[in-house]
Length: 460
Image 1 (spheres, rainbow, N blue to C red):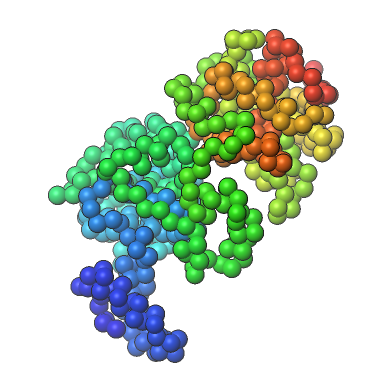
Image 2: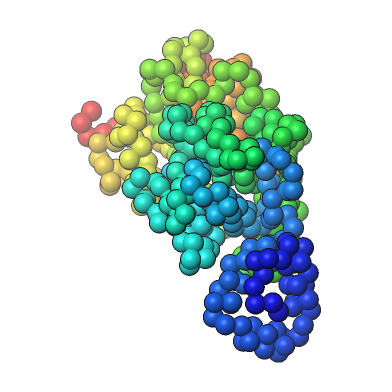
């Protein structure tokens, strides 16, 4: 093996590594042991030697490199290596690292398992000032970190390059547009570029990017990185998602169409005015909770939705404010619910208690006796509960404050005809809007189907 691969072309490096890989293990070990410590470090950090073809940037003057790939493909490693390459070959350049939420800049893009600082060569290790979200390399290149949940922060800064991670999970498309306006600094004869890494979802932003001639589209699956994934991780993914529509999206990176028989379709989310940055002054806000009954590995999630309503009666408009759904212990989801109740100055918590009985109410009351909790027992099928809410969407009477990726996926892919249980996010969604927009207090004839048990706070 040559002691220095720096002067070799990419194809020469790949050919060399294929030759090494074809050797038996004893000879490979002997070859590696013949290298000096510095040569071993250089080889370890020579990405062109190790990357798969799809992990190297396309060889033409694209503006956006859109890497649509399944979970575990190596998207984060690809984006991080590309950012390092940009910083190294463009001394003094300005980049941007944009994650769905601000903490993910630290936890994924910079110091994650495949983050920039984790994989950097020791002689080109950047310094990370977490408080200001600034990454600085030894040659003067810098990258500013942003969370896409705050579009206004991307209004103004300008860049030579950006790595935008999991763009299909960004809550506000406005963040993408603001980033594009800032991606305007040329470097010598190179135009500004963006590497966008994401698992696909059929959202307008991705559909638009796929149509553009300036977009280099690369697609990959989880299976392509099998050799680098833990056996347990891979086996768990296959047992859970293989052969399902969710698996097609999350493993094979297939853009899903609407599910036949689903109560919602994507067109309901695409009309002008459906997504807003801020809601109006809302008349009423509720925290809707559909609790899981167990906390085992394969337990359902606890659906927690923050929803509000503007106006009265048949002229009212509903708003989805936040989706806090996740896998939690009772104490964990109780704390999340109480915090949301206070943060949003909500009027009440409304909880489905078919499974948990008074445990739901007592769990919340034990954390804060002042929370007004209303518990409901559903005695009819989920389809009958969800159909009126789907009708409100069809009438354009519900809006989303930003994008809710997981919720919208569940709405558009669950079909009552499938025989599967309705998803937890959807259950909580219907629970909240039935109270806000279809109950007696909303000025609309209530739907018979739920028995309501009120638990008022001690101060009332």
